[in-house]
Image (tube, rainbow, N blue to C red; front, side):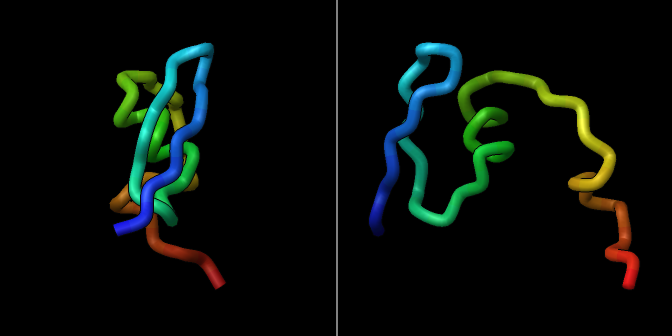
Amino acid sequence: MKTCTLSINNKKVTVEAGTTILEAAKLAGYYIPTLCNHPDQAIKA
Protein backbone atom coordinates (compact mmCIF):
# COMPACT_ATOMS: atom_id res chain seq x y z
CA MET A 1 0.00 0.00 0.00
CA LYS A 2 1.38 3.39 -1.00
CA THR A 3 0.81 6.32 1.32
CA CYS A 4 0.83 10.06 0.99
CA THR A 5 1.60 12.59 3.72
CA LEU A 6 0.05 16.03 3.53
CA SER A 7 -0.42 18.98 5.82
CA ILE A 8 -3.85 20.39 6.68
CA ASN A 9 -3.76 23.50 8.90
CA ASN A 10 -0.19 22.57 9.89
CA LYS A 11 -1.33 19.09 10.96
CA LYS A 12 0.48 16.23 9.17
CA VAL A 13 -1.85 13.54 7.87
CA THR A 14 -0.73 10.27 6.29
CA VAL A 15 -3.32 8.55 4.14
CA GLU A 16 -3.47 5.82 1.53
CA ALA A 17 -2.61 7.00 -1.98
CA GLY A 18 -5.79 7.90 -3.84
CA THR A 19 -7.54 9.35 -0.79
CA THR A 20 -9.26 12.64 -1.54
CA ILE A 21 -8.32 15.77 0.36
CA LEU A 22 -11.87 15.85 1.75
CA GLU A 23 -11.46 12.30 3.11
CA ALA A 24 -8.02 13.16 4.51
CA ALA A 25 -9.43 16.19 6.30
CA LYS A 26 -12.17 14.03 7.79
CA LEU A 27 -9.58 11.49 8.98
CA ALA A 28 -7.64 14.35 10.59
CA GLY A 29 -10.73 15.37 12.53
CA TYR A 30 -11.83 18.34 10.44
CA TYR A 31 -15.47 18.82 9.48
CA ILE A 32 -16.03 20.38 6.08
CA PRO A 33 -19.72 20.75 5.24
CA THR A 34 -20.56 19.32 1.82
CA LEU A 35 -23.62 18.38 -0.12
CA CYS A 36 -22.09 17.26 -3.42
CA ASN A 37 -20.10 14.52 -1.66
CA HIS A 38 -22.94 13.23 0.54
CA PRO A 39 -23.11 9.41 0.36
CA ASP A 40 -26.89 9.49 -0.26
CA GLN A 41 -26.60 11.99 -3.12
CA ALA A 42 -27.11 10.38 -6.51
CA ILE A 43 -24.82 11.48 -9.33
CA LYS A 44 -26.74 13.63 -11.78
CA ALA A 45 -26.05 13.12 -15.46
